[in-house]
Amino acid sequence: MTISRSVPRVAPGVRRTVGAPIGAVHSNPAPPSPGRVFVRRILKSRTNVACLIFLGLLAVVAVAAPWIAPYDPAYQKLASAFLPLFSDNHLLGTDQLGRDTLSRLIYATQISLVAPLIAVGFAAVTGLPLGLLAGYLGGKFDWIAGRVADALIALPALVLALAIIAIFGPGLTNAMLAVGAATAPRLFRVVRGAAMNVREETYIEASKVVGCSTSRTVLVHVLPNVRSPLLVQLTLMLSLALLAEAGLSFLGLGVQPPTASWGSMLRGAFDNRFQSPWMVVPPGLAIMLTILSLNMLGDGIRDAVGQERRKA
Image (cartoon, rainbow, N blue to C red):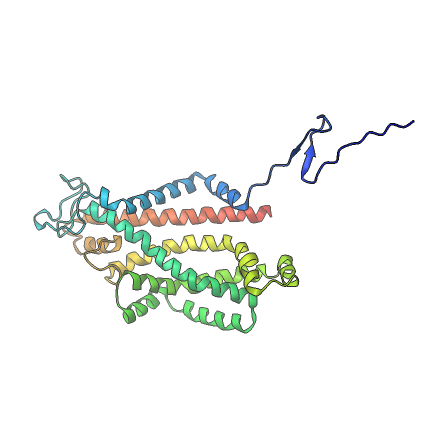
């Protein structure tokens, strides 16, 4: 007489430990999401963490500017003009109108953080959807959009921005929209190239076979797979937009007085470089450190994307 032993079946995704009782099973841990893996890879570098901390401190300073600034940035006191660094009650001295440099530097942080977001946001709104459609659809639409982008890229970005400002007038919003319009063709080319590579994948063909619409395929399948080069490009564009804002404000085409910005502070320091050469240090150092942090963070994101591709 044969005695049969029933062995419990193990459901898919559940494994039994060797040496454990027959009924003892435990589930496989769920793999971490790609977003968590990417963030973990970014935070593994001390340089990336330092850049994120510095940019976070700038954001805190910009938000808390009304409470931490010692003086009104527009308050003038001609009797206290050109005070040097570490003067009494003026840690970073004063400018040619007796305005506190530290207060103006703190309030200028708001402009220096908001302005690049305006420019990059406008570039993303215009360049991202056109690049996705051109790369995915191809054909005549790709040819026409590509030729327009080539024509705009052939123009120097600063000259194009100056032409747009000449039409609509100076000001922060107009200047940043002009910068965004000048950088949108470059974002278009990056997204278009990434979308062209993705559209040849098997899952794109599968989505067409099952009847997915073009908009669903682009949003659900193409866009998530071009986010890595897109994120790198947007990070680098933020530093370029910040530098462009400082340059336009230096020329008097960006932020208008008495609003403080790092570029306009550099202009005042340049005009009075013989009376107070130290005035160039605070805004110049702030611009340098912010652009350096953005560029190094962009390099870190690019390296993380490279590790992800090599692993794939």
